[in-house]
Length: 610
Image (cartoon, rainbow, N blue to C red):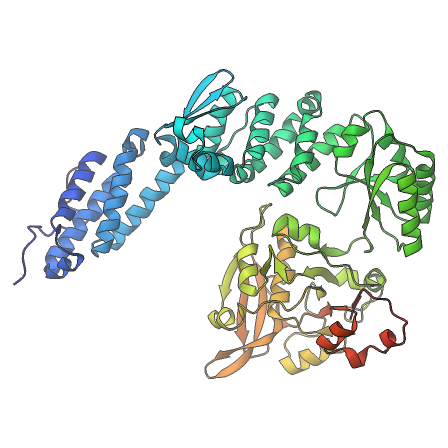
């Protein structure tokens, strides 16, 4: 025999309870749910359908009242809101949260997060003793945002017992630090035009393990540098010293970006013409301005991300001449962007000259022709995660500048992009599923990847296949001419006719298309263009080729297609796979019989590409 809970049927949103305060709603919710306590969750099955519907309706109505009442989200209501959240979880366990109730709970959670109630009203149980006096803060907030404070408060140090710490910082900075931590998003951080305060905030956050805060501060500090550049320079070179030091710290990409943002403001004082480099966070200086690096303020210039641009033999001669004339008391690091092939003996000669001139030389070889669309190690590290370096394929610059048979009248660099395909990212194997996760949450920039639709079996069957090796790939930035509306067999044959090329695989297609978007914001393989890929997936008892493309504002598609279409062509992919030359490695990779030059003694040990 069913036991009545004494709940009258009601229509949600019609005759519900009269308007109540958040506290009153909380009490009513507790009353309704306690009707089942201390009975088990299964007790709900003893309720008649009409009684259950009435109880669901009353809970939904109470939650909706909380959501629609502005006063619900005043700071003093935080505890009530947290209790309501807990009661909602309890109701969910009892199958008493209807769809309107679930929507109301989501709205309450969003509003709570929007105003940062859980941070603003947290109990202040920890004291920071500043130069101007104590500031009361919440220890949970510090532990959740700072590795430094987490270790201090949880490790049994004296500060965890006294619940206080003495630091040589300003009270105003601590107040502003907490305000930034409480801000729900980066957009809600508004930095004042106070260089000393912002500098102290950035320095403290970087040196005390506030890594997430540094990421949150990035757009605000970038805007601050842009608007307050003159005052930053007038304040001295402390900014450059701090950021140069932090390039090796916990936030290297952010520090490098801010240092690059500051560089033009500093260089205005030196009248050195510079231009941003294609290598992120680097500025190029024409070789004829080399002597400016050796002025009395060279200590500052040591910190800035500057690089000399060597384009031809004339520049190289000027560089060598300056080296021979320069003697410094301390080492000056110089980055050299070299856009010409340097024979090993020439490179060794430059290093000898640098040593004699007390200069620390860092040669960054940029052997690609101007205009090459490129995504290498530096960009991986900046946007997506750490990858191992891999030398560029020998002769790649010559190839990129040569005519491309797939696109008459155009060179390879005009129609193909050169992309590093790493085996691991942040020491984790690179797979399609892993890359999709990284691409949707880049470390910097606003161009997060999005997906309009992905056919489920693609990820089920191919999503976790890891890359076998690191390699460079060239992929066409569009389907090849004349490849649309053809069968896969014909498309495959046409791509194979291009020297060294094949149909793209799913992972390479995703990586090439989306890394280009993350870096530039440009959507290749747009809404009316798809490329077929090598992999197949099942559909209605048969297997069909996968396709990738249709990359419009709504996102990228990954599908399975069984018919020809004018939207569907074939991109071309050319891989350059490194082989470690050595007898054991040659046998391991199965290339022993195909490398006669090695056995003839005409090829040096090292990396080669095929």
